Length: 198
Image (cartoon, rainbow, N blue to C red; front, side):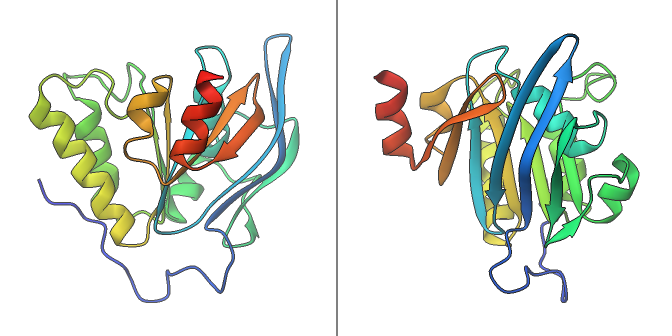
């Protein structure tokens, strides 16, 4: 498998602007409101979005993708407001979101293949919902981790979710711990592990 994360001239972050920024973003699922939440992901780092099932992780990824409209807040890439853009427009801007759903994982496509397809389009922002979930065998999991690390080295901003805190903290540079879409803690792997076990 060829990782397509190759830096392209003119696509690097400008100055110290985070590649992806969420500012006071909230969203609704039925009658429940999640958020507001603020976070930032810079190019060249892997950031975890951690929390129990039902904390709003996957739905927040749909907000980043453009499939779910936020109630409040702003989403930016390189400082530019992309909140009103649809999924296709965000992809043209380099934002790719890989979710676990029947449409994208149909025809026996694994999450590894879905991520590889996004990676080969040279993303600036790569968002992956539970990248190791559903992968069978150590080789597939190692291949997924290798793809993510290659993209990080190429300067891609990577956000991934997981409900397995210990597993995710082995590959992230830092992480956000959320509940009902609100950030409860932010920090490095050791800090987050201590917090999750407190």
